[in-house]
Length: 488
Ligand code: BES
Ligand code: MN
Ligand code: ZN
Image (cartoon, rainbow, N blue to C red):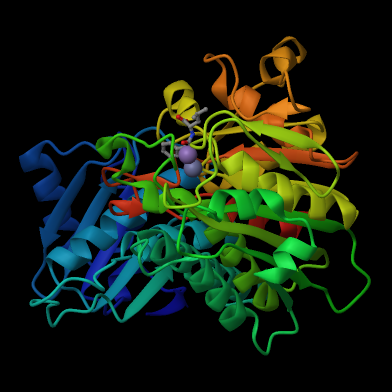
């Protein structure tokens, strides 16, 4: 889909569908005023007839002689909130599908900041994502709109607008990659599939891609990945990708992703229902790949190192057993009392390596605990860390990108919950506060580096459609991280 900037009046546009966000009480204001006299009359008539109110999400489709006009309510939102615009644009995309529009314009009014252009494109594009690799039959002749115009009489076709358009495109492609990876079935997306994907997105970009598999994993003492992979026919893998900017980097950021390509629980087997969506357990790793993919195009002036700990958690022959002890490459030992608390076991390896590489900060993303979903539900991620400044910054970027995070504390009193009687630490807590004890396990492998952990167990995967994501992987985290990397 081509995306262009329009600067004329809405009434002069030739698109099949004009999407006009309107606020409560101003249903015939905004870009509606830019329509032709006939268009204005038709909209005013329908608004009156249907008693349409621009409350949040409410839509009104008015069919003019040669095009459709869609009003999308944004309620009382003010235009500093970009999320309403993403959601309104997403409604526009849904209607575009219904009326099979080829050319669509989103008509904004007033002063339009580049962030709003970006938000409109993101909402529209992301809402159009489909995963139909495995659908037979009617893939339909309509492949979605071929062109989107973001229109505004006060918009300019200047460098800032062009940058917004291209950044939105890059971000949406990364989100689509993450969604594709998460939605892919586990029997296909094994750890070696993640390796292949990493190689293909880094090839020819200057991003260095190091892969540790087999004997190299052993030599490097990546014993968490090895232990979790032991019950699977699929060997585990570790990835380190390094992006260096052309100039002197302003900072060095490490991002670490949990890449459990299927989580059966291992010998501490999950019940069937809990396993249904466990193909999503590599969402953190997918976000790391999504971010790495975007870097060459966005070219932030920071060094970014992406680490992925990939393993399949199965209860097969040779599986690790409750009571087993893992010795990590930093010398620490961990008693495995529940093989279903495997995410922290593989992440510990990656956090050791990331810490040894001495970045300015480490951000890890993981579908780590069901407890986080209990606490925050499915649209908000948990965030914990040892550096309040870093946590605050990530939360602020997430607020901007519509990826909400809520901080949970690291609680010194709970440290005793993960004390082991035979090793340095054990991999489960006392029952309550599971997100916190999981994070505190991870903290033990972060060596004196500023660190934030984002538990994306809830928002990584939408069991029912989200505002601009269909059912399935959402790509949660990618846009917040890209926004953070751009602003350091
Ligand atoms: N991958 C799961 C966490 C999860 C649950 C992610 C639901 C997404 C949706 C993780 O490996 C896990 O199984 N955690 C256990 C930890 C427990 C055994 C201490 C959990 O949350 O039950
Ligand atoms: Mn598990
Ligand atoms: Zn897991």
